[in-house]
Image (cartoon, rainbow, N blue to C red; front, top):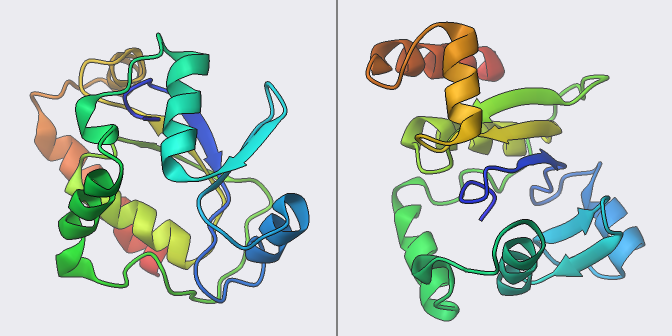
Amino acid sequence: MVTVLDLDVLFYPCPQKGPTFRPKVLEMGGKKQFPYMVDPNTGVAMYESDDIIKYLADTYGDGTVPIMLSLGLLTAITAGLATLGRIGKGNSYIASKVPPQPIEIWACEGSPFCKLVRETLVELELPHLLHSCARGSPNDKNFSRKRGFSRRRTSKILTRESRCLKALKS
């Protein structure tokens, strides 16, 4: 839903056994359940994917939830099937140094390359500000204009994402 609405979101990753942010979720919300969302604009905090999706649609959109995000259990199953080839990726914790400021990433959640980078950020428990760049969105157009390329020249995008993934792993 974040990508659909072209929202920028600050993520605090909570991989299993992650020592930094998992305990904060328990402290803030009262239970270790994920996802957990806090909207600093409204003060709303909540668990449950379906509730978060509906909240985002109502608060930052026109209230419409795309069909593929509104199927409840079927949505969860199809999302799980999409990650079968990478079982466990993005869940385990790898010790790292937390940077003084969150890392900024421009990505489209639907991109398999961006997914790999985000999984690595989560495993390293690195806070990151995600600038959603769905194809044709205002963020995508602004990013492309600033960087001097378009979606038609995808080799630059793929190269940039590959370098980003390599840099995160080193």
